[in-house]
Amino acid sequence: MNEMRDRTHGHAAAGRLRGTTRMAVMFVLIGVLGITGFLAASAFAGGAGSQANATLSLRQTNLGQILVSAKGRTLYLFMKDMNGRSACSGTCTTYWPPLMNTGKLIVGPGVKRSLVGTTKRADGRLQVTYSKHPLYTFALDKRAGQTKGQGSSNFGAKWYAVSARGSAVLKAPTTTTTDTTTTTTTYPSYP
Image 1 (cartoon, helix red, strand yellow):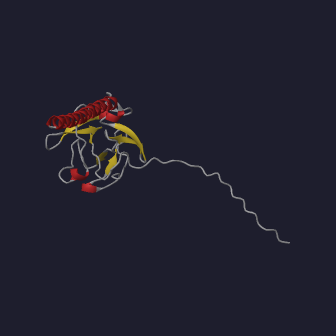
Image 2 (cartoon, one colour; image 1 turned 60 degrees about the horizontal axis):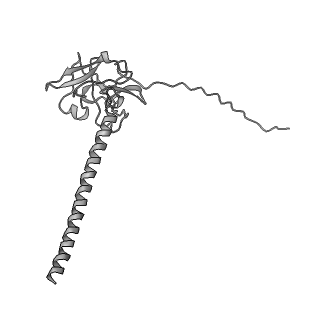
Image 3 (cartoon, rainbow, N blue to C red; image 1 turned 90 degrees about the vertical axis):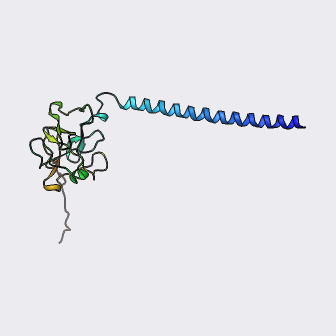
């Protein structure tokens, strides 16, 4: 009887061990597949010079074609900045985060590499410039391509999106439409 009970407990313990082993192998396999997928996605998205990873690239918006960050966020210049130096600090940077240089500056198609540079901020960090204008994003632009900061006059001067030439985009491009509708009115005839 004791032998039968020991055999039954032994089979149950072996079954639990096999179940635990299977579960552990499954977790390891899921982890390996997850890491492999992440590395493959990173390699695919991270091709050198790809527009998705460009520090600066161009995007078509309601203002026309403008400079955007690596995440597609509109880049602005601040009219108060002088001689390539930022005049936005403290609370200003909460609303207008500077585009910081975090490594190699990569430019997308249509962006002039010769216009890209950096300027040293008061804290010693380097801010990206374009045509000597320090560049900023706007905190209320929540999605790529939004231009909610355009024409704002926060912190003592105007903020404008930046064109591919490196100048302020002062107004949206105009489109010309031609109306060729002809209206014919029929009047009742009277005797």
